[in-house]
Image (tube, rainbow, N blue to C red; front, side, top):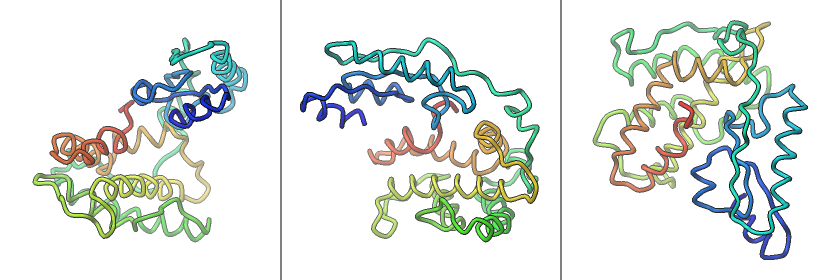
Length: 240
């Protein structure tokens, strides 16, 4: 959107935007942007806080008063906190219980494969109930196997079909996270996890979360520019 803003401004249309990642906005240098220190996917803050969300929207619109830019302002307030119970996931539990691989002595690839296998029936149940899935490029097992290849050097350099290594890794990571969320939401009668509960569980209590953090560190040291960019921008949220 930041790049598009430059074209719109050239046509005489003033633009403003909300940024969740200040580094990206500083690089693109859009005419006007409001950086908000909120969770990814929540540019206006958490749901069910309409007064706060209106305040954020008005702050972004106020930047239109600037005659020229680039203008990058920081929103001065943190997002309202959700209840402590929701933040800690007390109202939700994954249908499968397992410990991080570091606590069980398993190698990361084996632990990741075990988790995917144990979660697959729950994912299939939810897919049957909903009739749709967010997975777009890989089956869960295929995504796990591809990510496992990047757990230890030397890192793969060959394309994955028609996909470059960086693109394939990014899509596999997206599909793996979607698979975990959908499987974790499938328990009958249970309240689906909110974004904070799921994020805390995924990044702190699963082999998949540990694996992606390891892959990120490995790819950051790669000579492949695309893998380094994928590691920096797409594998692990900056907040982690």
